[in-house]
Image 1 (cartoon, rainbow, N blue to C red):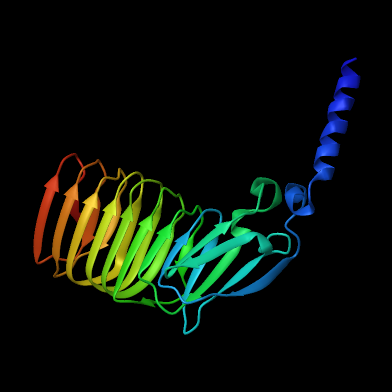
Image 2: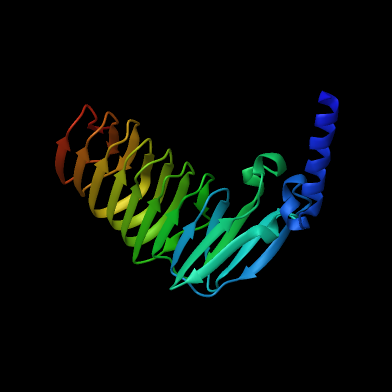
Length: 247
């Protein structure tokens, strides 16, 4: 009797899955051979990128996206541009069965960038220096890491939650970092020319170059910030054991 029940359940499962359209049976397909697909994009100045995508940002004179992935994955990258913002999703199902996250890469070419919202779980990096007047970065509840080189008048980076490691290089006049959760940053390669503002509620150690600039820090957790150089002015508020430590 038990064998009969198992056989009936298996038969029902096969009937249900066989009735699905091929695109809805994607969990049973592998990634396929790696290919490259070019998607031409309208111009945009902002990006919002969702999970399970490895990203490389490339400043260019034209806007397009190169998708590098298995042939059964490339057509399930969804995107839209609304009011100057590019938003991207990975709609592929069952990644744990079909592919590793780092096997799906997007190379995003753009002419201008003022805001980046990242929900991702993979590395987001820039190929070369991104030049802009002001850049806002929001690491939104993800665990993906960020590695950017930027030339800007001002940069604002916020990590409200998550486990992101944020690496910044380049040059800017004003740098603001608001890091909560388990996020950490390394801005030793970022040359700031005027002032730095820090709000730090992480329990990890972060790193900063702060030579001959105004340095303002509010520390509200156990994590320390190691700074290199000699700031012209230091303003510090501590609510816990975390501290600014000169190296």
